[in-house]
Amino acid sequence: MTNIERINKFVSFQDRQKGILNTDRIMTYDYVDNSQVLIAYGGYDRNKTYEWEELLELNARAYRGVGLDMTRSVYDPVNHWMRSKVDNWIHFMGVDKDSWEVQQGGDTAWIAKRPFTNLEQLKGFLPKIPNKQEVREWYIPFMSNVLETMLAQDVVYIGAVEGPLTDAYTFVGIELFSLLIYDAPEIVEHIITCCGIYGETLAQAYTELPGAVPVQFMGEDIAGSNGPIFNPSFIRDNLLHWWRRFAKPIRSQDGVFIFHSDGQYGQLLKLILDELEAEGINPIERNRCNDIFTIFEEYPQTSYFGNVCCAVTLPYGNRYDVEDETLELIEKIGPKGRICIGSSSEVHEQIPLLNIETMYATVHEYGTYPIDVDRIRRRRDEISPHLTTRKG
Image (tube, rainbow, N blue to C red; front, side):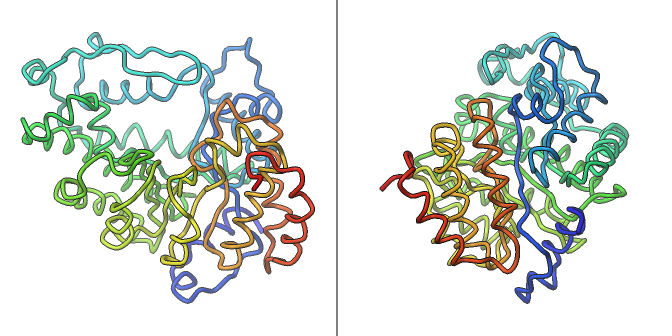
């Protein structure tokens, strides 16, 4: 069975509703920004400069080699995705290219220069409503190429967009944006609208592409380790209708709309799963944030993506810690068929290659249906003396 066949069976609307399992194993899913994966399995050379086509092909080979079935990422170790985000604002929202600066250091990047620091200055540099046709003319051939290249390596590439709130507060800066919610709500609405139309256009165009699977990811980081960043009532009033618009194209194909936010969901969980009725969620961050198994008991028909802790277990645990946490997910959620397993957010540069390999290999070895729970429990007992971060 190919991975395209697996994901189509996984998201089958009728099977989801009836709780039917008609696939052969659990799939692996992740966002990869780890150069060791590209070096070991794709042949990446740090001393070489790559064209986009070469980098895309290299990523696809690396994902297949390391055991990754499904992704939403093409990793460039040299150019951070924040640069691409600002470039898209410049191209499609009329942002002045000379007034912005992105700096990169270590494994991250940030907007180091904006042409405004307060409300009055911002008024002179507001984004413009993007032209949908211009967005489509860029996105459709670009994404068609990504889908075709990944498919050639049996890797599923899903649609992915930034949420309108995250895009908006990234544009403004979180501190100023938080003040504008009260001091200039009309400006907040305008910026969210610009970002919303851009993201909605991508979500619609993705469903029209040959080879696209009925899965749409939206990244909307609205929670931190202590709970929601924004008041749920603000989100309900200003964002819920946008989220539904983002979800509409994939839902028209009976697909799965994945809502992503790091952090502790708190009150937002019911908004996401009861009001938005997101079919999928990524991740359930486990590092003292959320209890995935309690959430799964309450929402057994939701599809779960990721969930091996990338804050502690993957970067700091040994291979047995990684294996044990992966096995726990297979044991407790796998039998119901509603999980695709990978990291809790991303396979970042601090994660050793051995731990990445162990996580995916464990899914492939123990995630075959029907799940052999007794075998998993025996293996967990066997490796328990070797645990470090998961010990006790």
